[in-house]
Amino acid sequence: MLLHGSFPAGEPRVAREARAAIAAGYEVDVICMRRRGEPARELLDGIQIHRLPLEHERGVGLWAILREYLGFTLLAAARVAVLASRRRYRVIQVHNPPDFLLLAALPAKLLFGARLLFDVHDLSPDMFAERFSGTATRFANLVLPPLERLALLLADEVITVHEPYARELRARGGGGKVSVVMNSVDPRVLPGAQEGGADAPGFRVVYHGTVTPWYGVDLLLDAAREVAPEIHGLVVDIYGEGDALPTLRQHARRLGLDGRVSFHDTWLPQTEVLSRVRSASVGVIPNRPSPLNRYALSSKLLEYVELGVPVAAAALPTLREHFDDGEVLFFTPGDAAALAQALLAIARDPTAAQARANAARRRALAYAWDENARRYLHVLDRVSARSRP
Image (cartoon, rainbow, N blue to C red; front, side, top):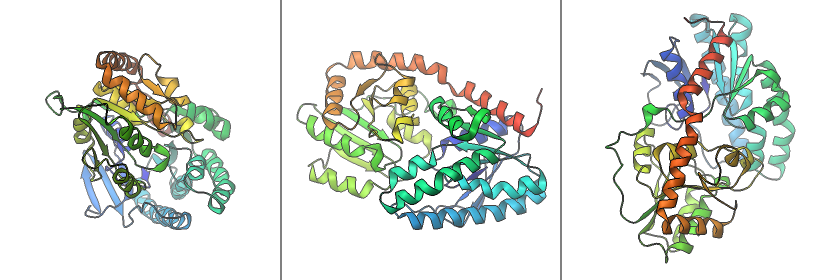
């Protein structure tokens, strides 16, 4: 597996798939970036991790990101070439972004017959268009769509996170290669019944995950300021790293939310984060309306649902495609006042909120990881031409 990111920190999808492959009898190497303090080589849960001497930088401009992505792709290509000459990989799975990371695996395909599995976490052209503006956006719109088409062409198989993405990728050149493996919750990372399950005092609002402008965490702060006089014991816990953290801290201070809002930006294992989330009164998905977010099915939504936490979510198309009004309390995307009303509704009628949470949990049985692991292994067996009893 090739991953422009850290492993296992912040990459539950990669970890889920790697563990599933190991359990099915595959040997798995992961080539990834190296965070400060991490060893260059590590064996974890049977997965051999090779960390390259680059760390992802947040909050930098387009050209710095391109240097980082290109530098990692070149280093990954060199490491793959060395390992493939010894290991003779049946499959190299490339996790995007960037899409051109697939090129790092191309020599192993041409020289040693490795097959390429392209795992699309995000639509790269849409993601970069969301992040940048002006000349950077024009550059991204010119260069990234052809690179996406090239990656889809070169890949032997493509998997992605949900059906709306799959439909779009098929239309963009993926054709019949595209299968869905959802970002479902691996039951093994769920906290035990005794972990974090006790009711917390007051009304606790939680957001966990990447903290970037398009995920709308500032709207959550605005909503918290509006409802603070009406919800006794209101606290907001934000777990995650991201470009928007410095701005959000300043925004919280301006709104007078010191003492009500806590930012937890130290990386924690997924099980520990979920143990802290479990006692929340509500989990929030405040994604802003945008071309990128119209396709977003946040993994945190599925985690809230698995933990039985009531959810307030922006009424965006892909979220609505997977849950309905009887399961999730939807609010108008991008509208802090509408989010505030959703928080008030949950605080005033916790019985109805818990009934929705229970219904969402029943719906989520159709999205369970066991079934998605079977789909993943079916694709992996097919692309590797491996038969299992």
